[in-house]
Image 1 (cartoon, protein in one colour):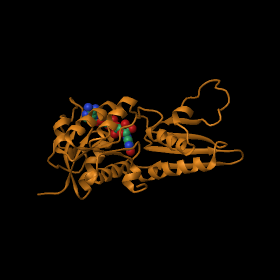
Image 2 (cartoon, helix red, strand yellow):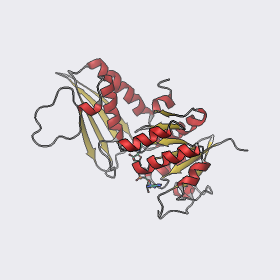
Image 3 (cartoon, rainbow, N blue to C red):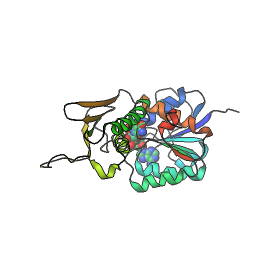
Image 4 (tube, protein in one colour):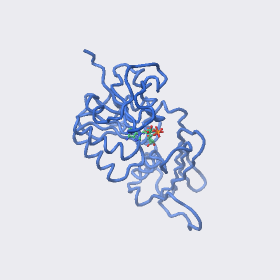
Length: 271
Ligand code: NAD
């Protein structure tokens, strides 16, 4: 009997979904056990290997998330906030690990994921790349070292199809900077500036959002002081960095106790 880990993909016809099919297919130790899309999606019934341009793999795109989740050891869900929150509850009942990459979740949706993580391992990160995981750590460290006389601004750019703003990664970087300063981001966040805003408030963490073209994801954390400026930048050139991270996270959950884990834990950047 095969000991390969069975991985299910939600939103398999999406930009990320297709990459997961390819990535799981190419990675030793795991197989795609099922893949679903939104009910009524035009591609339901198609072989997902064909969808992902890797040739037929004998698994048809379905629309029944419940059954797919029951069969899988872990699922990868990069879809929409309500979908991921609802699938977290199904994972909880089925004992299936969840790799949750969807961004833009509200408090209730985040609470649902946290609740499910009491019963199953869940890895959740707004950005599953190695580079951004490192940048998060560096941002926290630098914010703590520099102190409040340096103004922190976070600039991000993504493709024109992105629906949430600032990006989940930018918010994560803001949280890392706030943690470095030992404050809560919600008390210092400045995501919109328009019109006569007055001077910048000391201690605020600002966000600027750019949208356009096919940009996969650029993030810069600016520490602006008197007479000098430090900028930490990450540029994603391909979505494969997220796909590689997510599949690595799925394999990592195999022997893990229930819990809510970050990519730092998966990559061994923290205990
Ligand atoms: P996309 O729109 O290309 O894909 C989303 C897919 O989900 C679509 O195919 C859609 O039909 C499908 N979907 C919607 N409802 C569904 C349902 N009920 N059941 C199954 N499938 C359903 O979007 P994308 O660019 O692939 O991004 C998806 C999400 O992942 C976004 O929130 C994005 O911000 C996030 N993302 C996270 C990371 C990360 O590293 N954490 C990286 C890239 C994107």
